[in-house]
Length: 94
Image (tube, helix red, strand yellow):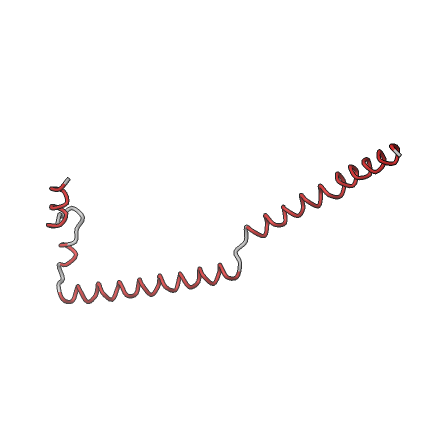
């Protein structure tokens, strides 16, 4: 009886090493490779985000044209070195 159990354990060990372990490795390698690619949903989301960014850029250009038509010097008032009254009040509070 002990001889039969020894053969069963040995057979199980050999099957685990030569069949189970390679299957496990190839299974996770395949999952890893599939995870690196973009899905169709991801590609659609990227396309939608690109279209939204393009539309927002067009809107910003339109707003800049309108503001330039109304006040050609508006960009000079928005320079980073210039402090506004709200920025001065924040600096005073600190």
